[in-house]
Length: 281
Image (cartoon, rainbow, N blue to C red; front, top):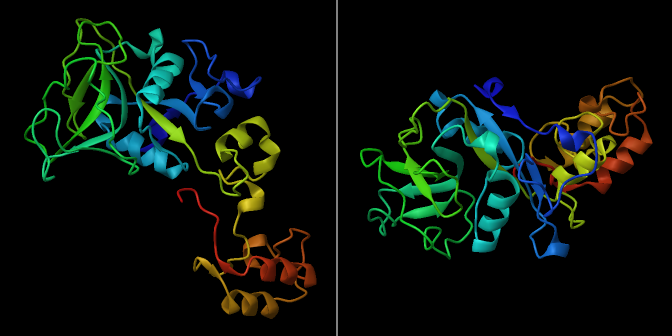
């Protein structure tokens, strides 16, 4: 399934990352703290329509992100202006999926505007459709609905929405529309707590993720040899049992010099305790 999704990042790999001054055709944007933002990064994925909402949701989590949660009107406006309001996205009357879910079993569920939640737990503190109509109910028979930007008049506007069933796009289409669907994903993990989102650090300096596994190299939990989630005596015993032998990093060569020595023990002891490296924290 994941091979049918495509991360659209062409211009960023060739030059400086885009910020709040991103053009409308940008596929990626950074809402910088200097401009009043949260420091998060946002980009667009495309996927086959028949895969529904679940495919980009799973894909986002697999790369350490999540479908975008528009926790404030300002975040909605930034995301729309910087990457959603682009002609190449609006082949369809339904714009990109976002990380909003309407739980039909929730105590506060009522059509059309009750029971909505942000997928990552961001508080639902404002009404996304306060500037326009609540989403057109098209999936009442499902256990939950998901939200996407919409252009019911075939014109993209920030405050227009449509809700779909997660596995079957149901929002009405424009005459002659073309097939591809999109979703907006958000990156916010800062594994080392330095105030910079890992995605942006990797994008601007690929050498920070030399093995290209999506985790900053200095954040990887290489000392967790038994993959238990904790660096403890079991890992130390595995390392000592292989002392002096040539090994791969996963076998105890934590410093990557090709052989297990005292320097590997020092690193393991320094990282002792719960493993903090992860894609989705």
